Image (cartoon, rainbow, N blue to C red; front, side, top):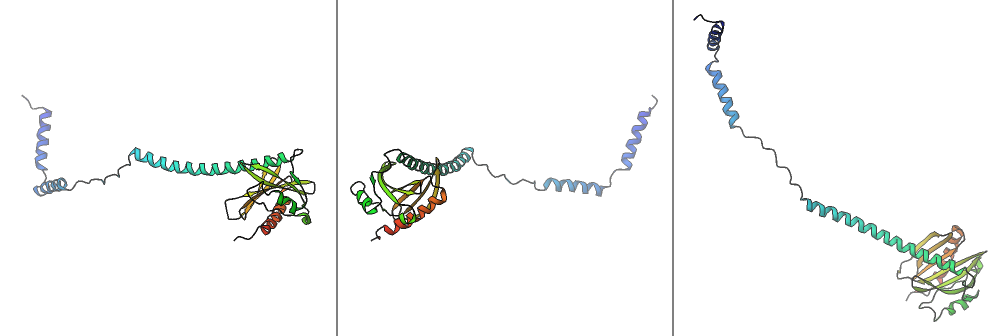
Length: 227
């Protein structure tokens, strides 16, 4: 059989492979490198932090949400209670302006008005005369606000009627005057000397605040000193 071109090519490859075989030192270095690579420590990534169980996350979220909701509810309830009292005082003022409802006793003398309350209330309201300052006392009546009887002192300021509602307050500390507007009427409220007071009128805000400041000063001076 005659040799083919394929046989000649095979012989040439085998001869060149033997001629160009790597020297023993190079082969040993390669084998040593392989052994070192096989013996090197394997890199292990650090463990990931364990995720909190979903039920624990839910409890945390619920607790935070509940605290926020409680705080918001407290603020809303407090605001609702204050608004309800504002409305109750406004209703009493409007009701007094109806015919025959403004006064139970008509008098410009505070020495007549104050004794009139004796036996009708469980407290003695401070009654002051502001006639010299342009706000004469014209009388008083009993009123009923949010479940309790209160004193209503009636003053006139020009052509305007001012109702000054007074009743005991459990807070000993005095509070600053606060201006509130309801249904076209202005109200100024404050606490001092164990009493809560509300001045209500259709006077403008500045005039009613001036009246309230004067009434507060006179009422504080009229209160008996604490024992």
